[in-house]
Image (cartoon, rainbow, N blue to C red):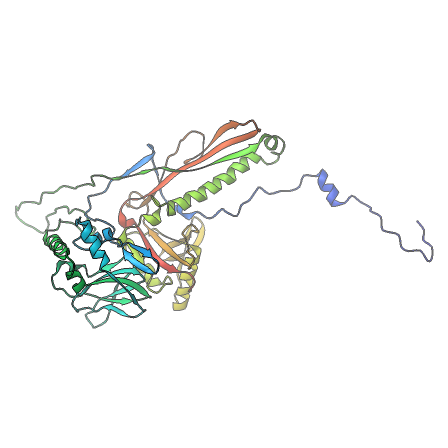
Amino acid sequence: MTLGTNAEPAEEQQRSLQTTAARNLATTTKSAPHMQGISSRWLLRMLPWVETTAGSYRLNRRLSFALGDGVVTFATAGSRMEVIPQELRELPGMREFDDEAALEALAGRFVQREFAPGEVIAEAGQPVEQVVLLAHGKVNKLGTGPHGGRPVLDVLADGAHFGGELLTGEPSTWGYGLTAVTACTVLTLDRQSFQELREAERVREHARRAAQQPRQAANKRGEKEIGVSSGHSGEPAIAHTFVDYEPAPREFELSVAQSVVQVHTRVADFYSRPMDQTEHQIRLTVEALRERQEHEMLNNPDFGLLHNVAPQQRIQARSGAPTPQDLDELVSRRRRTRLLLAHPKAIAAFGRECNRRGIYPDSVEVEGTPVLAWRGIPMLPCDKVPVDEHGTTRILAMRTGERDEGVVGLHQTGIPDEYQEGLNVRFMGIGDNALVSYLVSTYYSVAVLVPDALGVLDNVETGR
């Protein structure tokens, strides 16, 4: 084409096939389907799994004399906290007290009080003049050291109770001090209010009898003592004994998580090359089921680990943020702690506390992945450990395996149409709407073999 001297330049013509058109005749390089919901699932990877062939697991233990959870529960009525009358049986000597009217009258005499951080609730050495129930907040239990210090014996939180010996009517003194760490709401019953109760004499008599009854021989874990003779010479009579078991052991039935995957026959027939659409639909569904499995193993109200921590294995973060002292206390509650499990925010908060103190935590390799560790124990991240709206969470410590009487996962392998261990995919047929259905199921549970196998650091603040 020629142009005149005054003509406008012609529009440049297309000289080759454009890429947008060429893609229609070419197979693109593509990835397999991905999903953001896949996590590391350290709990599932680190737990030893026990074959549960009958679908249930009976947990046999030695007979223990521990009764109740030792924690008093409260009801909320607006801004007022009220103790549930039956929960007063958690007080010393009140376990077998069955007079409902007396319990209700006793509960009605408690008065709500507020304490600011640093306020003294009870002073060591002073007469016990009130029963104290901690409804909300955190309290330091203080002792008296041999050199005049005030060591923190324990940090207690919601549900703790003190001064129950007042109910016997016998004079006694506080063997420790109580100081509020945070703002605290407590319910108190003073001696005068107790004595004014018509039912007070019945309560006193019951508490006195309970205190005077000889205690069953038990070890420090509350298990029935096994008689053993040692340090003797000659031919003395050797102690006779037997090992008693729990008469009604707990049984764990395998739980299930399921989903039905549906794929249209047209998709399966026409669009399964080079990637099998059915295979990827099932693969991603399996990933979601495994995520749900780990969530249930932590949070299920029946068998979940967070709901099966023994009261004596729950400790409180002393200053809110997780400190090295807190983790030392947590680890010291059991032998052979294998792992610490925490939300990534809690691990980050612990790292900040270490940096603030100039401490450099260890790093260990677990399955080829470097992770933070404390005292050589790996701290594994798990986003299934809940963090509430206030940024408060928990850190779990556990011993694992049957041989060490620890925490074990429960599953059954060799099930029909097994796709992975303890998980199967079963063809359900083709419906009138040409949808192919597959039932994907996974069966699982978790058991804490002895109470000290699992511990938790409560009320960990991640935002400090």
